[in-house]
Amino acid sequence: MIPRVLTVAGSDSGGGAGIQADLKTMLALGVHGMSVITAVTAQNSLGVQGAWELPVEAVRAQYRSVVDDIGVQAVKTGMLASAELVEAVAELVSGTDAPAVVDPVGVSKHGDPLLAATALESVRTRLLPVATVATPNLDEVAQLTGVRVDSEDDLRQAAAAVLAYGPRWVLIKGGHLSGDALDLLTDGSAEHWLRAPRHDNRHTHGTGCTLASAIASGLAKGLTVPEAVREAKEYVTGAIAAGFRLGAGIGPVDHGWALRRPHAG
Ligand code: PXL
Image (cartoon, rainbow, N blue to C red; front, side):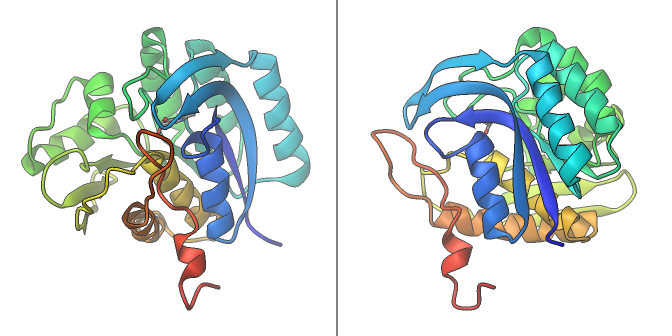
């Protein structure tokens, strides 16, 4: 049977990030994508114009419907909006026998808040401990741990600070530094440095969601964490290179790029 992957995240009406990015990524990578919607954003290339959370019982019901009948080989979490939703999702994930990729989404590309400040402690103490892989960017590292990364030399310290909350692996995304896009994947003993050239392309909406979903897709196929992260980074780098203009602001990465490769399967 086709590997099944569940995203628990917010909807981006513009189709570049959130649930929409997750499902497109899963299609491109050959897994069956399913969704639990936690919040709905009114959003376009210019930013987030509005956001509405779903009731906790609606999130729980979606999750149970999917997991209890269809089953999942990996779960990805994204925008969770509130402490109440973070705690409910952490509990659901901890009761599911599948690897979990936690993207601790804090703010959108435009700086719009997607997580209440009052939810940070729940992310630290409830959600990170159930993660197989956590994928914070540098802003999220600072928000969650207080560690500020100014150069590649600080990535190790950032990783240690996140690992202290209990995820099995952490992928620190150094893409907001200048120079190459350098990420550090570590479980506290093994260290994998992933470097990709920086593409001169401002149309990068959805990169974080896409990367986390690609990792979950790889894990669902049975790849190890380092293999899944390496393949996911390749996929997102291609998607960034092919990112395109849409609306008047920041356009999305191109989830379909790999489908157009001559050898796409
Ligand atoms: O990339 C973070 C993110 C997650 N979830 C939703 C988003 C965004 C960024 O815009 O809109 C719904």
